[in-house]
Picture 1 (cartoon, rainbow, N blue to C red):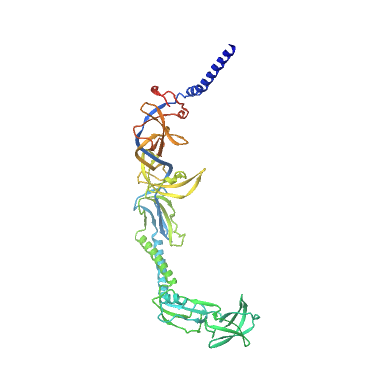
Picture 2 (cartoon, one colour):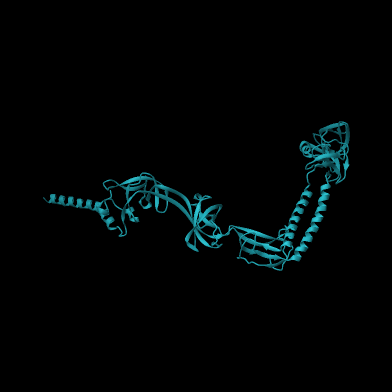
Length: 499
């Protein structure tokens, strides 16, 4: 009897333990539900999802324009300061009449001198010897086109500039430096001198007055031939040209010529480098003179378009000075096009979603109740560190508005991606496990089950559902983070349960 009672109490104890193990977690979970936790049912609908990228920045003028003044002219008066607004045609400054007259006379004198130089340069239509020498190669002839002759022969002529020809020979003979040898070619011979050793033999030089260029030659020591080679120019100077036709060749082959001697007379020669430079200088001076003459007729410096004065670089009572040698001096820097540019930083995680041409909306601190339309105009490919993230400058262009001023602060929202009229669910209803994304779907008996879904675009509130749900389905989810701890069979509003 005692044994049976003992077994009975052991069995009761085991049953109570099993019940406790099963019930305790659920009781603890239900007791740990925060008061703020709320479980809701939701009917799946169709809607729109938009992904946006935000940033803040400061307005800048669209572009800048430099107003130049003629060099060497005194500024009589300046009527604007940095920060002023000027309309097209407003007077920015007045130039001194006497200094304008003096500068015009100075430029006219320089132009006259350049015109004389151009006349001399244009009359020169020849190719001259750049150094003293002997003509050892003369393939060009009268009537030849200069460019075609150079392409065919490599040069119009080649001068020997040190009076020597050379021949390289390969030989096993042993010669000493300055040894005398005899160089023979078809039709003539000349004494030569051993001047250096080469990898295969020796280099020998001889006078250039008789030896023909590129002729085959044999070298003799006494009466023994020690090697053969080709006669070359020891110090060659090729003669080229840049165009035209050869109308006259002034020297024959092997003639000795002086430096600057006229070798060829040309017809239809293109302008020389000196002529082109002188012509460019004249055009520049003529443009400067035209500007000065215009200011002589009307000495006012006018705003070329509606603008903001960014900088005043000229000074009253002081002559202008060119800093870059162009004959123009800095006068004013103007901001034009209105304050329509804003640069924001987009971090490396989002920059791939931004494209030129995308639309943006900007809210200015000064007009917080309004939004201004903008467009992405430029995205930098060079990043700059911003903490542990790299940021990329992105330029936005706003529509012009006369109320906007450079320096105003604002924030921008760029529409990166969007889909319309798609199946959407609240982000809080979507869970993840090893199989993927799922929601709790209510069936016709108001019982819940896991339904795996494929999601698409998501914003801060909703996710697009590509498959697994359709509009009209009902799901359940908790509106606080407690839903991730919710146990099965917890009470649902209206007496329903999860499963």
